[in-house]
Amino acid sequence: MAGEDNFKEELRSQDASRNLNQHEAAGHPHSWSPEMLLRRLRADHTKQDDKFANLLDAVGEFGTFQQRLVALTFIPSIMSAFFMFADYFVFTAQKPYCNTSWILAVGPNLSEAEQLNLTIPRAPNGSFLMCLMYLPVPWNLDSIIHFGLNDTDKCRDGWIYPDAKKRSLINEFDLVCGAETKKDTAHIMFMAGPLIGSLIFGLITDKMGRYPAILLSLLGLIIFGFGTAFVNSFHLYLLFRFGISQSVVGYVISSISLATEWLVGEHRAHAIILEHCFFAVGAMLLTGIAYSLPHWRLLFLVGGVLAVPLISYIWILPESPRWLMMKGKVKEAKQMLCYAASVNKKTIPSNLLDEVQLPRKKVTQASVLDFCKNRQLCKVILVMSCVWFTVSYTYFTLSLRMRELGVSVHFRHVVPSIMEVSARLCCIFLLQQIGRKWSLAVTLLQTIIWCLLLLFLSEGTLKSMTILVLTLGEFSLAATVTVFFLYTAELLPTELRARGLGLVFLASAAGAILSLTIINQTHSLLPIFLCCVLAIVAFSLSFLLPETRNQPLFDSLDHSPQMRNNVKDMTIEDTSSDDMSEEAAKNVVLNAQILRLDPYPVSKPALEQ
Image (cartoon, rainbow, N blue to C red; front, side):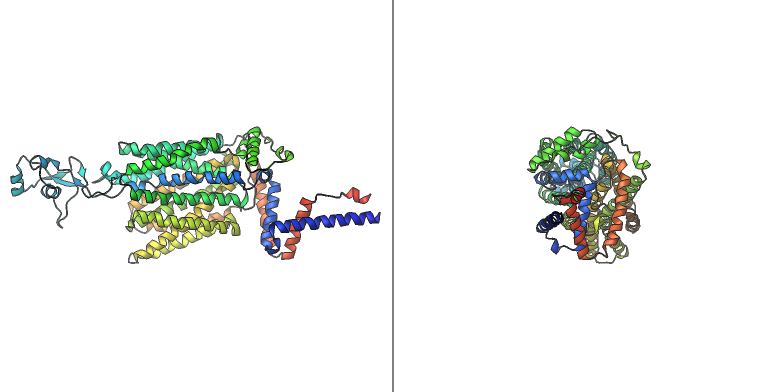
């Protein structure tokens, strides 16, 4: 009997040693720090708490299917940036002169310079008055040259642009001589699109699904983007830009929801970071194309042609299985998971697939009112709305400040875009090392520092120094935006994720419109001062949010209290782990692996026999 017991004990010891050796061979834990070991253990516990994470693990955490899904976000991100920033390149400044072709009736051989000298009055400094002209008189050319013209009036027959090298909206629709404010109207109209689009697409994404919302937004990009090239009035141009802005915000909301629900752990963060990097690539692509094209209509034609291949997403884009499950479409969710597993050349165990069941309430009936009823969600939305309002207001303020300094429009987009790519790639390190909450705090703190520097830079400061600080400010804001999107998506439940993102986009649009309004009304330091105040408030409020790194996504409102409890437990673990030695951390992981991987468990009754 004693020999049998010794044999079983030896069997358990050998098996535990084998499991440990397999674990070390796979991950080289001898080179890991205690923090890395504990992070892996927490991730394992997270998967145990989230059955859907176990399913995705069986499907393949980041196999061919997920890689293809992430790659599918690249082209729409490029095109979204292309159409979003196109306004900055189609309002090329032009020098107008009143159309005085009436004098050609009496002097058909006059050169353009002679025509201007005879029919356009001059200012005291000798320059032409661009918005005035001499009134026509029934004289012959010799009398006009000898006596000159005296009576002036505003331009009656439109304007000409003899020095124009490109065809822009300025000389297409004569946005000069009192009509310059229409340029700002176009920017405000584009920013007003998200005010409505965020609510509409947030509702569509949660009610109809991520797949149809993405297709609808891409269809909007193609129709409104391509159609803008054929508008015949400025008001129609505003309408099409309004439609494009809604499509852009719709795509951002639905694509982030889809990526968040298909990917797990750090793969989710990497996917959103890459999507944002390609958004910056789109801004650089726009700059290069706009620089080489002579006509603003060609810019939208090229953009429309590049967007046409997005129609193929009808056949290759998947739906979110999490959303399908929450809507009671269990069969479709299983089919989608099995298809993803087949692409990844994996097989989902039948017992694991059987865990995909209808929610307790079968079909969830969540509404926007739940953001008011649920205290946790209300806090998340209010804090994130404040952060997004701050980021949007500050970004547009810094961008407009750079324009006031006379910086070239191409420089204002190429250099910051390059900086934004590096800023977003830096987020990979930040998110892995300090988590979502502290990454958001760090990027907001950087924004505060740069805004304070701008506040104290005097008017006599070197222009290059101010431009450098403005660029560094946009660098910090780009990192903040990336962390913000990931953080917000993880804080919201599946059934309200898109509508929550829509609400924070609402705050973003409000911040952009406020920035444009204040900048146009005052040229003092007030806009920069408000940037500092808002950034400090957002920085302070960010500490009210829980950490979401290594935490399971929760699908319904019923699971949100559980999430908060898990966050508290994780905080306790983080506090206690600071004093844990490396040997103790290895022992914790070893014990967890023995419990999970023991293929020859010896039950207690068996040992007693």
